[in-house]
Length: 113
Length: 113
Image 1 (cartoon, rainbow over the protein chains, first blue to last red):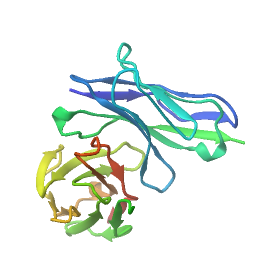
Image 2: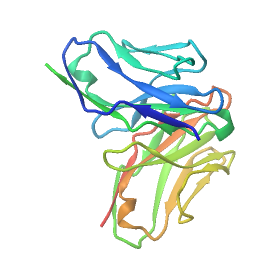
Image 3: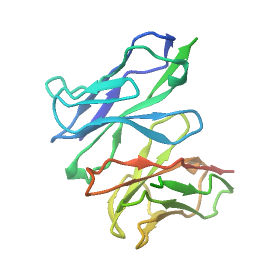
């Protein structure tokens, strides 16, 4: 079945450091890929998405590129801020499963000033 | 444009009781999905409703049931509450006309004592 694997956290960085959170997936068809972010005590916010191979999603300085050849969708940001501290979830959905979201386990990001 | 709203924000119940959680979908969205998120874990898909009918279900027992109304709002009902039902319950809405991207509400925190 479909699955998403993301790097375990927590990831601790200093402010202005470069961020990469790895995400790989297994899917039978052609999924859409997502990154959601969850701030402490809040619900999930869509951060960015990509719906086909080689698409790049971007938002708030974060980027991720849909790589079909490596089945990956790694999240990157050039210069992180303390306010980026949150849990980041990678997810996929496919038409064949009624677009049900399949989630990674989440990666907690801690940014120190 | 109004986003996804959920009520109540917090709820405390005792084992064996029944609970109803509510969700109003984002304007223009016709699909609602429910997820359970235990503390420190990723969301787990409960079920999805499209045009007032269940359109997919995760690995949850029948005591988890739902409804979708003509205005696309939704309810999640849980009977015979168990301690392990303590979690954040997240509702997401989406539209089959807008790429099926899911947008989440703030969640309802259920505590079962």
